[in-house]
Length: 233
Image (cartoon, rainbow, N blue to C red; front, side):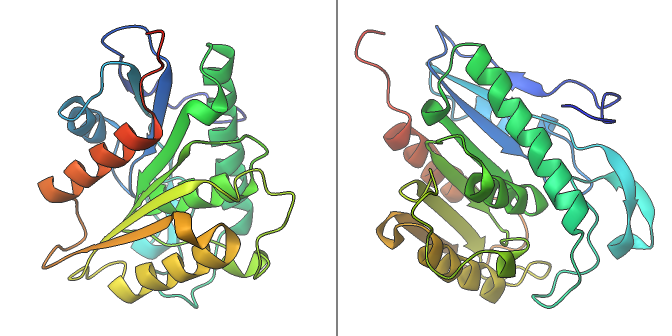
């Protein structure tokens, strides 16, 4: 991380079982840490992939009566018309881009890096992928939304390096926090910004605001498809 977030602990990492030729950077949800997701990825790991689960800085969150908790940016509400922390979202996105740059320096090209996240982390991963100049393998966006969606043009701009990236969006149809409709509207918005054939939206019957084993299998398959082993490994 960079800027004034130097007090944030180092990410939870699941190292590759052999030489890492690809990476997944996955961002947790509000009030969480990267540890639980690192454990989850350890259960579906691929031997050539490094999994990086950073921890958000602690900050007061308007949604929760200004209580301090791990948060990538401030959240005022979880409805489509809620005010958004534009400066905080952009600052957090720059920190994630710096994390991607660090992995590139470590020898993993950006097109072999998949960005992902759950809830607020998924929101940040979508926003970062659409605004970065780094060509990414794709995004796994779980139970989330696209922040600052009105700042994006309706049609994918020709200079977007990730206009052909693959996106797996997953959402429980019983989500009481980030409504399912918000997730499906986000998928439609994404289809207007990147190649619509590359956007997959999966729903899970009865799933609340959480992940489930079926979903994690879908995530593993998506990673296997878009971060395959390199032939000389």
